[in-house]
Length: 289
Picture 1 (cartoon, rainbow, N blue to C red):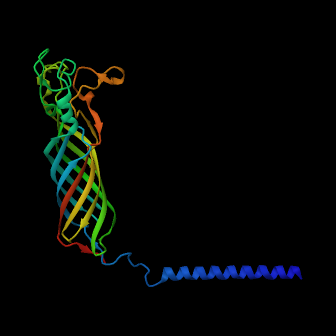
Picture 2 (picture 1 turned 45 degrees about the horizontal axis):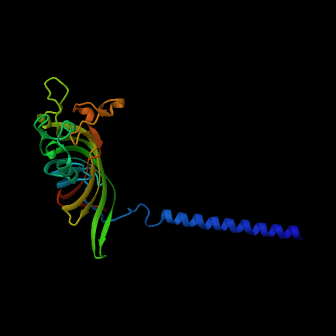
Picture 3 (picture 1 turned 60 degrees about the vertical axis):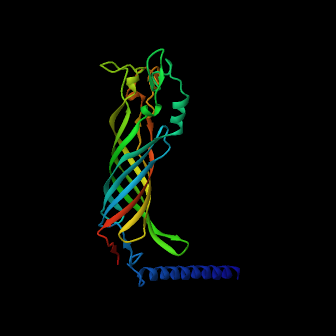
């Protein structure tokens, strides 16, 4: 009797399992072969980028500057191969530069004497040192010219007060750049170079740096033919921002050597934030099926 009861219960459990499996398989099969099979995830999607040129005037503000802030005006030109990948160029020139609080403090506090003659701008020679503006020796960013590829992995809508909806996307750019700078000219190295304690050694010289560049940003599309954007960008390279003799001698070159040259360059990400207004051509975006 007990053996027959156990056999009956096991048979019922197996039958229930088979029935459940059949129902699940049937439901899955209906989902695959239903009326939405092969339908796109979104219909009537505005393809704001695909097949269009973007011309965007830009204004960039440098961030976390030690000695000099710079505002750069420029423009970005992109061709959007698809709605998620584009190639283009960006260029800007340093139109406005101002000294930072640190520069102003060094200018007002640092003594001009034989001990500081190599590193702080001055007039005259020992022992009659006079004061000269420290801001005149700190480096400047003159221009940037970059070629880059842009990837747009995410897009959606931004709701403002649950009443205004704006198409929005997030993008990332990467490429290479030429950066024109002015920094303190080489001195103290012979071959006609002045001594770094000479007041004439604090002149700035133009140089070009080659650097990678990457950016992250958001684009907002209030209309079919124009956009607003905000972007974070970095241009990592080494330069002598303060015009100091800080390296070149001693262990691993970590001590001053009474010369100003490339060994005195220090690495920085050279960050900036950019705002832009973009214009798209053709002016009408394509609409997906």
